[in-house]
Length: 260
Figure (cartoon, one colour):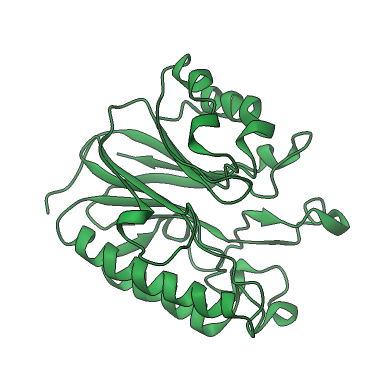
């Protein structure tokens, strides 16, 4: 694959209800001058997604919604071709958790991995199966296309991505099997853009519980990622923590990736 040089600014955000936070999102898009926005947990069916709000400020919309839960979307200043939904990839009913499109010479993915509930639950097994299917699909994608993936993986990759790794050890999002599945995705040719920029030792958090003043005390986890195939030239990647300080914030903060 040849190197990709187009300048582009991509962000991912678990918005935790588009209808509650559409104004916050509009402000973020304008302030950060985002070219492509990847959303998770939009929590509405596709026809109720407020496309006109974002079309009015220059974005095309691709949406895979679901009533009350889940839901993913892509907003793009560029045209989107070959939009694909998770129903084309995941045979089991995992809800609306995957959407991708071909945008400006990149295959760009918005993903919302199941949480897994607790390690003794069927939901945890289902999470690992979902990640296995995702890896097999992405292996095919990465072999032929430049690819950027953004979303809520519900996995803290390393102990440095957890404010208290001892307390979280062997809990969902921090178990070895979950972390190993994420490593297997990276091993097929993806890089963890946030970690590449920050280095191995710097704590990075993208999620803070609403309870116990977790954000003000910086008791967070890194559950959200921007991954890219290694032919993508990255300039910067950072968490916009200002969004977590909004009134009625999402419990997640956006991540922004600048591609050269």
